[in-house]
Length: 429
View 1 (cartoon, rainbow, N blue to C red):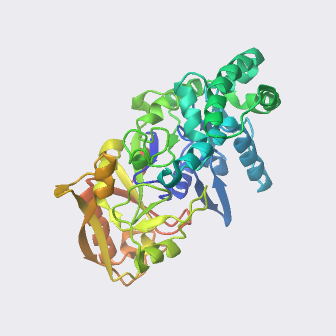
View 2: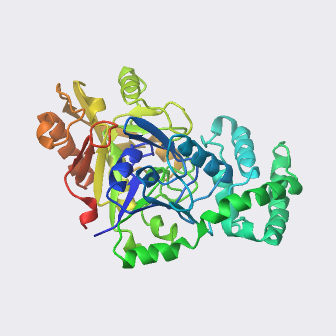
View 3: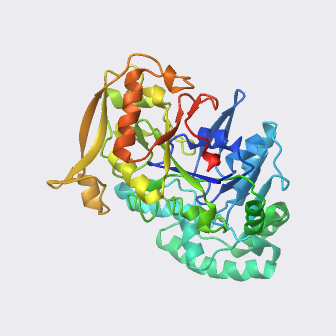
């Protein structure tokens, strides 16, 4: 049996939570490999709604969850999320959640710097969640980070705090923000140590053993390819690599262990926050997509910007992200629209492109080239086979496959987990 990696193929919020939940019922281990508590997955299970930001989605299905070293971990956010799930009747503890001992921690100074920088940008703000994800990754790369394993060594924590505060307090002062005192931070971290360390282990060893035993592992990505720090619409991106290749580095396995890569895409396009969005609609159709799709960020609560399906962008995400098959979600939101449009490329300063350029001004200048298709009058909601879909909806799906150069392997037709059309078992290899 093969492993499976799931990543977003647009700008995030594609409905990965439901898809990962469906796949988790077939997996044995679910691994988060990048991002932080700026990610958000909403799961609807047995009439109950669970909103996760850090915990792997398999937790709600009783599967072993692993948080890899590629994740930046906010201790308070993690413990708060665990308590929230426990209040909903789910067991979460070291028996079903393991965390890479080398995962970097998010400290209170990280969101403080994040918010201060965003405020200083004014109208040029990036649209971050303000949760300290970027500054935490900066400290990781700058070799200043306090990692989970460090909590077992008070002397190490003390020495690292000296270096962190030297760096961060200087920045905070320059931005006119309050600075932090070492004693309070040290005391808070030492109080967290006995609550966090029972979850810590070298997860790469567990994953290596799982591979040798033939256990099915699901690698769960956060955000999406077009928010990748290298390959996305920079600088309006997240602070980690969201492509499938990072599943290996972010969890401690070899690249050949990732298995099949599924890319999740909505049947239209949405984006939260700032940044270019060529197919964005500012009219009644855009509002209709937002209302029908209940388009609000799981983490931020911000309304999502909505637009037509951008096949050129998804094709780019497929190529860069290593996507072998698509999962198309929220097809039912398009029910009843008389006409649909698909972006097949862009006009950028007089040039026709099939890709979104990397340069900022060129991205902002990109004008979509549309192909119009007839909509369908019937309903796709709740369909569990292609035979239940209107003929025109099938044509729409087939055209997307042609344009993005990847097959649609799964189709989601409602928030309910079982309202899923699976054309192939992803774990079959």
